[in-house]
Length: 229
Image 1: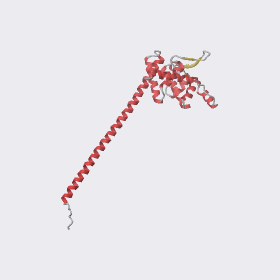
Image 2: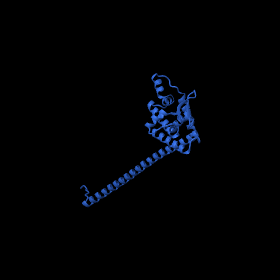
Image 3: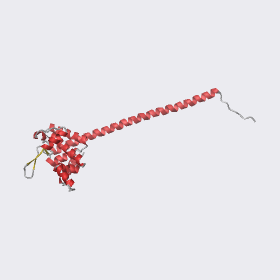
Image 4: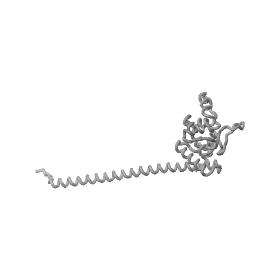
């Protein structure tokens, strides 16, 4: 009995090759097309993600500015002009963004130091003028030294009594103390007592007085409550 054999002609082999190549080409084209679509979708997703992040940042900036305005209105009322109010709000906003410092912390210090009185002049218990001026109760010597380092030039009391200048100098001083001590608590105590007094207490491992710090914290909580959305 003879075995049957199947032989393909050269034309049949060519047709099968062409069909196979066409199938491979089809799948390769589909893969490439889908790959391009996925890349496009991934790119669009990245753009969307970046847009969302940008909107979140802009939203936070806006909320911070509104929070500053509400706090200033609550604390100062109509005790300063509209122009001075705007300059003060913008300076506080810039400081908060540049140094990642909650503007309400600065305003809590303002509330503790002067109760929001832009014309405040510090007094010792004897009634004698202490030299502290304005919203953040800055002394002229400190204002000139700190101001030069931050590009704010204070020449006289009139300069320092300007709310926008006073708060910039006071904020710069507080930021410097935060950098020196590495925490807000000791920085605030030093803001009140002076860094020399705090350094001496720390060297002796003596406890720091906390009444001023606690007062600022109370003021801060009050501002947060008032300015919440």
